[in-house]
Image (tube, rainbow, N blue to C red):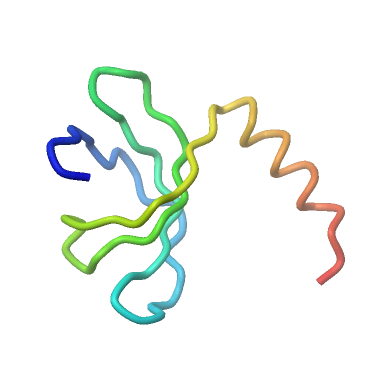
Length: 72
């Protein structure tokens, strides 16, 4: 995202690489906003990214609870 100011505060999960990008679950601070949980593809040097989703702490808690009940 050209011109988008972001800071990866913490990398929580790094998924295996598949093609040019690999997916990461990070805690990311976008601009001057509070950090949010963020899942998207990143280049190896984290200068390029794909579209992704961001979740608040509350949304992440709901997701965590719901995923716990999924049989894989």
